[in-house]
Image (cartoon, rainbow, N blue to C red):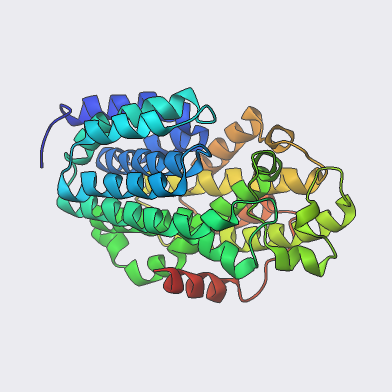
Length: 359
């Protein structure tokens, strides 16, 4: 292991400073982890965010995007020059990329310096995740249009490539951290992708109108076709009744993935309270977001369904009080999910099937 960016405290201080600029949720949850895990998970998030920033910029053409993703992988796996990558990637980004994301890409050498401080197992897990993201995301370049994805299977695969793989990465890091967690490895990996997919689907639902304004749509055509809604006509003022019916089904699917996320969290030993809080806060915020959407199905912006700071504080307080009791956590989940539609009974099998197919 190298120490290109100083000791662990310096690295943690850097990550804690930059995370709030690129992720409100992860800036809240990652510091709850034990220090060695906080460093690895924070670093993994920043590297995945760099890959995602390149993916999301509409001014980066497909050929260059593929080249940049390949270079990012080579920086991690072949020790290629991070500064050269950062300069080339930064020059390619357009005005749609935020200043904080642009700064993060420019900081790639520092992020990679922290990556090289991690254990070999942690580095391998992170690079595997980044490779899967960079290989999987281009499959959906042809789908970046207002008409949506073909069906729920394609949406499930998309969510796996951008978020399910992160669930698997976290599981690998958690298992390396604790023998007690590693004892549940098969059960955790069976649920890991579904956990990530639940969070990603929540974001897709929340951001649907912002994505639409940018020419993106990640909604599944089959579900909306069943309701008589043509996603080619997607607009905030178009046939909201049929749109709400399709949205209701997606809320149920997301709810089901978050139920799997709770099962995952309860497999973490009670003694690992920080890891439990990390998982529970993400689940709680996602559930409250889904409830906000259901209460306001005519929303036209993420701000219309944004979870308030007061609600976030309640999630933090309630999970701190109950994280040691599985029974209390199940009751808290039911309370937070009150009013959400029920998920399909075959959701776990669906999530696992797509995970294996995508791997």
